[in-house]
Length: 261
Ligand SMILES: Nc1ncnc2c1ncn2[C@@H]1O[C@H](COP(=O)(O)OP(=O)(O)OP(=O)(O)O)[C@@H](O)[C@H]1O
Ligand SMILES: [Mg+2]
Image (cartoon, rainbow, N blue to C red; front, side, top):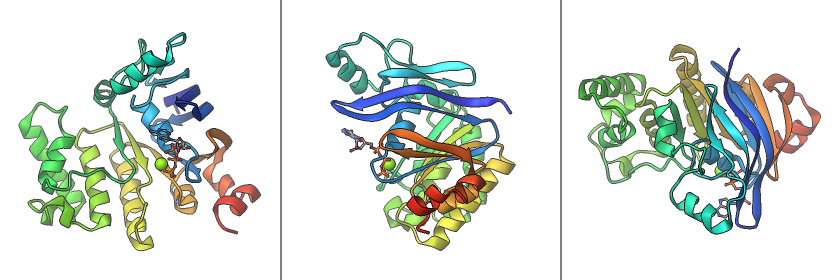
């Protein structure tokens, strides 16, 4: 398996708060890999760093053998806030839209749908990098086939959808750009177990049938580990465990801290 994404010793800070400390991990092409950890561990920060929304103060991120984010050593703090405001990562780093253009799509935590837009308009937003209207129309139909509930609700304002339907829409919106790597930030957040199971089933199909590599962040450790091949555990901004997901499921420490056993 070839490495699609490689995170090498990255550090990210919010002012004095060190959110990520020497984090290294990788995702092989074709896999589903998960990251579990408690509230505030740094999971969302890691996803934001991957898509260029948070600058690195150490380390680098490589996607398809190309460095997409790199720390800008020697940069002073006012420069650092300048780069943050501009959603860039400094001199050697790509902008968020450039990273998206390489085939990396993020479904952000809390879904961030455009509530006053229809389902269809939200999907159009996901295709902002696609120039060809016929391609966009075809992709939308594919999404309506894959998520029939979205097809039935295509003209409806997004705020009228249930939480689960909004999550499906957020995933469909990310898929509009035909990504190779899909980053999911807590797709199960606030949803009932049956709905979470539905969403995980869709993620499985997206991975197996559409050949999309998935990096999944979840607080629901059991679901995430069952759905994935490999997993990482993050505590206080550090990776404390990395293993095959089935091994993590039977790991005493993981069972006690994350599986409530
Ligand atoms: N914009 C910000 N400004 C300052 N501190 C932040 C900011 N975003 C996150 N943090 C802090 O960084 C740390 C990591 O936050 P992060 O959102 O990455 O955690 P998380 O693992 O995603 O948590 P959750 O499971 O609650 O979503 C926390 O201590 C958080 O308070
Ligand atoms: Mg988070």
